[in-house]
Length: 119
Image: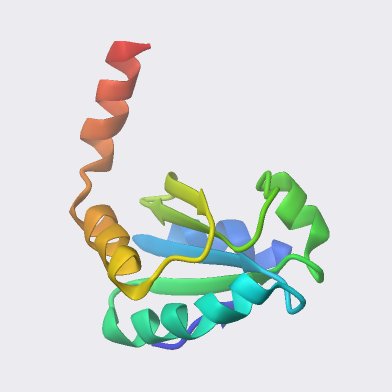
């Protein structure tokens, strides 16, 4: 599955209606974003059960602000509608695949329960 472009109108529906969603916040003028784009696109074709989306921070400035994006590229991952990963910087393919595997294997309910216990 190829990546999709997300707008503010589609963002919440996309992360709640799909089990796992990766979102790449990027801009066309950003060199590291351009370097990460083919790595991200390739991962989207290698993991068909996962939604891969992109948000152009120039076109969607309000959405980028709401997501607290301060550096691009920033990769976020949602599982079951919950943000489970957020990291700025372009990842190499091997690191991205590790993140994908980690998110796929994560038990969100157990992680949230553990977080509540330690708070």
